[in-house]
Length: 257
Image (cartoon, rainbow, N blue to C red):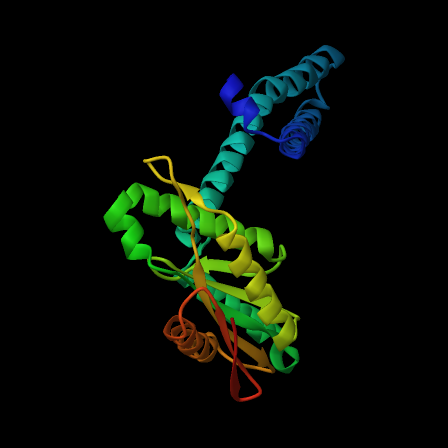
């Protein structure tokens, strides 16, 4: 096996590769020995011995490398399929879930939780993002998006879902939190982005800010319903001056700046 192939196989993968190769070879060996013993058992001892030797040598020579090769190719195929699935569900720039994958994950989580579901959907939009692209170029805009995505992931838990749903818009589903806790998470994200400026080509530091719409939920709901509410709250946050969080709680809007 070439070094590049070996470097891609984990210890667990190497163990599985060895098991399949050994077990497959031993299986062929057992079948071959059994068949030759039945075929040559009525012959003299020399013929039987030669038959059994051939029955043992050939599977080792042929089956061992064949099982090794086939198992290796199956692992490479499984790895390629996994990478394709990841590419199909991931935004190439920010490495967040893309919109389609986020919706699918949220709907699946809601179906699994049923009436016991609780949490919030956060809609996050970069403030004055067009100015960054127009003033400093789209490459700086990409840097800004990557920075925002990184900060969001750092501020949420491992099981929370983070997706990029538009040009400079992100959505986060936080589960198992109250409305007040969700608003607190939103503020934590907002402050963290504000405190991590990016460097521009001229050497100056540009402060990023975001606006967040928060749609808490209790009980069964859909992504569309949460998205509609969170998007409306995001509009409220923008209209109120940006760099703030707006949330709908207990059927009333409560803005937190």
